[in-house]
Length: 468
Image (cartoon, rainbow, N blue to C red; front, top):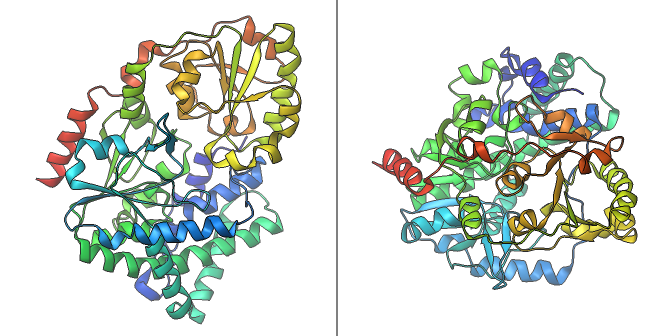
């Protein structure tokens, strides 16, 4: 299985790819395309997929999103606040039928008078209603950026030639063949990301100049394709940060860089200055440009403290990555007859990005009696299950804070990101029955290593350090 870190070193240890830039804005091409390019190369090499599908657009939903987004216009935000640019995907529906963002809302509530969220749509809708009224829509800024893109951003012949050259350089550097479709997709990614950057940088720089935030957090800031926000903030001397919001290790593309990227100071302007980490375990494994602070995982901490759930001894919970659909279908279907024999129920937890495509992807599982886990609180699902199976993700480690019987499904996705520090018992279609014969390795004794304690003090210290 081809590892991401191999490709990162192949492409980035020498500075060749940093020689290519657009004449407009003197834009370095590689930092803003690297994550998408490497992801597509890996998916081609390791036969991986994507968690989200292109669902049909419903006019009524789009209209409602537009209306709500302009009511929650980000230009209404006061000046001088802490702004979180965050994703709508990470919202959790509570029993009150209101939505809570598991990544940012705990940090918002720590300092509600001085913080505000600018949120992306999720599956073409702005998640609503929310548990607080300080959520504004990113969509108006995106629309303005697209208008600027359409009317004013044109590539010169020199820019087109530079993009052609970097495409050839990427293919020259890698040591494996890629498909024609992947080759065309790589070129399309570079054109799209560069054009989006040029228009968005202008719009967000003007916006940040008007609003003068004290600090901005950018979800997925380390991915590079939102660097127009970070670079704009850098030019205005506004500190930038990112909250850890998922699984990272030495094979995560966004949080590991080759030697040339680390050493080039100009490259640092495209990525967050600070990265707030769950704990030492995660921090020690990555080689990122950002300075790291150990903060903790407030959502996990708060939820676990409130849990008092009775385990259901006949329940198996499978956590989907949304990436290995065929492998997942095969594995869970093989698990069905064994579970029936043992009089156990299988619950399937879809990835948030595939919730609208469950029938399209997993109809055969539903026909075989597998039930969808729709619990508002995934930690309750962890507590109720007797056995938990999943791929490499933060969810597996979070589950280990609550449950002892954790098993790692050895899909192509897991093999791509697996390392020696992940100690859970490994299972595949050939040894499914071992789940019911062995006890998994509990990680509860390492909780402090995974999740830093006293997150409120840690976050307060960070703010005091940065905003002094």
